[in-house]
Length: 251
Image (cartoon, rainbow, N blue to C red):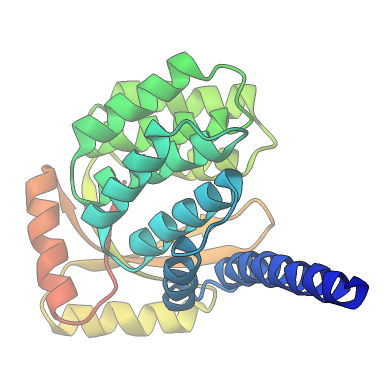
């Protein structure tokens, strides 16, 4: 009887360790940015009877994988469901940021801005507040609300000068008040110049933007166009993306 009891305890302990290891594997896959693996592991874990807090972590990582793999609508749905559950700790803030990103990537900038403003009003003590400011600023930039965006970016520099977001805010404040499409960022200037020439041959208005990072490194960003409307920038982005270039609209 005693040996049977010990065997059961060992089996239960093994099952528990497998669950913990699986969640650890999921987190490791996120750190490695292997989002196909993240999606697979999250789906597998979601079918298990994990504790509520662990399951909420799994759902968050599932939403993150959907976001990184370009399934923005599904990511939006996943983050919304998680937010409704009101997870504890910083997971609620992270899920809210995920929702803002999913909305932004679909071009729903007004909705993204509303979500960011809600976070700023309801989460005054969050450790992620500088990121909330940045998300609100980016949405304002996409909506051509330059003055409001400038105020938010300046707030980051004043209130959170040592944050990661401060470096991004400084770069965005240096941007001109027009839209452009970025197709590459390089440490090697020669590579950037080759890409510029390639685009010029294609009759595109391509140019370099030199950016100093907080750690002292210099990046050479290849951009195309100087456009007055977001719609024009989106059309240019679609054209360049169709040609195989990785694209990102700035600011």
